[in-house]
Image (cartoon, rainbow, N blue to C red; front, side):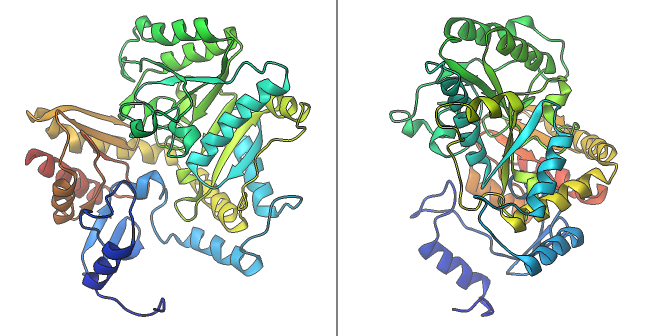
Length: 432
């Protein structure tokens, strides 16, 4: 079957159903899938001719919308030169330029960039960096991690081990995952007066176990898939202080929050703190290709390099792929060339206005918005298959989970499409 062969929507669905296993789906009782044949701007075109407004940016990744001319050109230009080359003993201009740009725009102490294939792998890299650092400087006992309940960091084994053991979707593997420590998630909302009691759980754990702890790992300000919680910047400041006080590294997972999602370029900037290790992914390439980055301080890089191994023990085959790094460079430069803060403020205002009616519904527990992230939290878990069909009928594409119906649209979405998106979300939630 050639790529040029045209298949109907029914044929695509039938072959998909027979042979493809989708993420977080059953292989035998999977809900319907919707064949997409093209995408432009914020719209997905289905094989049956319908169009959907993408309200979830293909899982947080499509920053500038689909088929963007600047990113298309960057991909074409790089393709004419080389699509891939190994990164062991070799470098190339897109990776060099992207690394320099990331160092320039992230918090000051971060000076070294390690590229990998996906967000989950960037978390694995961060964990390995922290553990290998302490091993290299003679503190081999510091191998455990401290993280937050309601957190989510990815689907590979190291990442799964620091996801919430109940809400993080990975409890089936609890018997074989490394045992780490989980502090209570902060309860003070982003814009509420801070409650000092929020830090008590983490403070107690770090005081008791700091001699074993390699790092605290958390999602700054916004806990994503684990609950879509927006918490106080003051909490993050106190975590940074405790890590410094007890000689524990701080890893900030900004895979979901990086590049402007929360109204700051990076969410840790809300607290004016810098991590020792920073994870980036998702929007890094504007959704074009899979790429992630883990940044660390010079202290960590030197500590590892002067240790027993003499090198950092990780090396993905497709590390710093030229196509991915070229498009990433173009995507980040495109973002920075625009008044992106004003744009995020516009989206935030529209989301607040458009989702507000849902707060009056009896079945809704909370409505919250931060930057370009809008969340309707239900009192009970939604029927995923049913609500997905209703959303598609409204001409919108979002992917609810558990009790959460949320939207994170591409930055190029205009007010008209935002209105259609929020109106559709509220209408569907009202029928639940």
